[in-house]
Figure 1 (tube, each protein chain N blue to C red):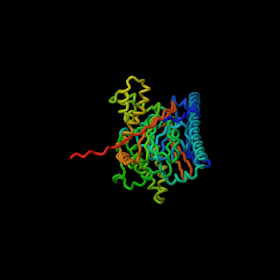
Figure 2: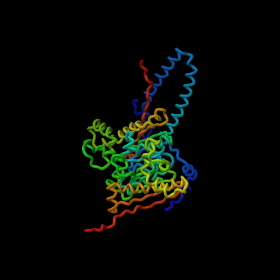
Figure 3: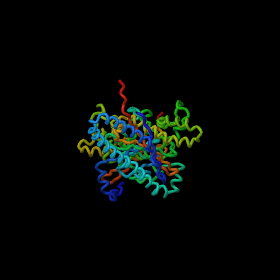
Figure 4: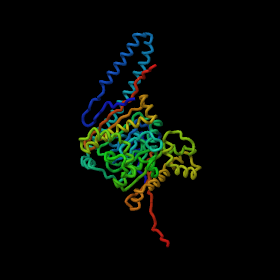
Length: 201
Length: 280
């Protein structure tokens, strides 16, 4: 099956992209069919290296259990030198709902994979359940969608190649939440710095 | 190291000004005061300080412009989506707010040039998309590969997608990384990349054996397609995929997008069991 040439409309862009890519963004987004970053942020070919998984999660550095996530970050950061990481959570996220539905972390899983994966966000779930006891389950889920992004931003720092570039100011970390019910997009930054050290002697 | 969250923006119809400026000003003023105190005691450091301040000023200018660029790019991107798509398709987005029922589960590479929304014009709601290095599907492994497993499980069992498509592509850095591994037993040069792309090792071995006369680039091109076949085979190691394929409620296809030539190849995986012979 041969598709008619897309390069007819933007020849110089596609000629350049055929040789190499130089994206400025590494984007984590959910696999949900409604939240493609190319749609919601109008990313054009070549702009964003994208990782999409359930509930846009990044696990802690773990060479054995999470080589997929690690590889997907190591390549754009160390070989493509992206300058910005953006983690985008979203409304009505099924993965976050599954996380929030786990009553007892020690109980046997009902799913083959899903619960083990979304448990990456457990600290978000615990924080939300404690701080927002009076809210409805749906409202708690919305808060958890954003707090889980913060957990992921923190997890990013467990990767040495992320940490060293953030410390040098070469890599910016941002979180976001896309709400397709309201049509809004929130964006926030993670500020990370070390203060000059006190030297005691 | 104590990370803090600063500068929150909300994009809807109005701009919100960044927070956290007051704190930043205080720590800057304290730092400048400290510097002035030092220089008033050690005036010979003046020239050194001046040089360092010039370098710092330049660095901050570059940082500020690249930060502003990124935020502006995100803001203008969302504004474009909101005005051109979201507000013009009220019925679609009202439906999608209630739930999704995509017909496709798509595996594509994370490469910035191969987004399925572009190359196959998927609209919101059409395709559940997994993107990773070299669009790999590892074999069933609850311990080492829970990420892909969770996505396949959710799409097949809960969303009940009817089609899985695994899309490889030209000039794939991950496949090139796989083909460059001379010796599987040698220590890896990367933290993660080699261990991940080795999922496709059977493809590499096959291509290297059958195409010894081809150039390295041509071998890579063949490996991009053969690695898709390895992934298609790996999909069948997931019991819920196998069950749906056997019932004919799920079709599995492989594809290869070549952005150098502007072509798209598509093929199917035929999988069936014949009726059993019963010996007694």
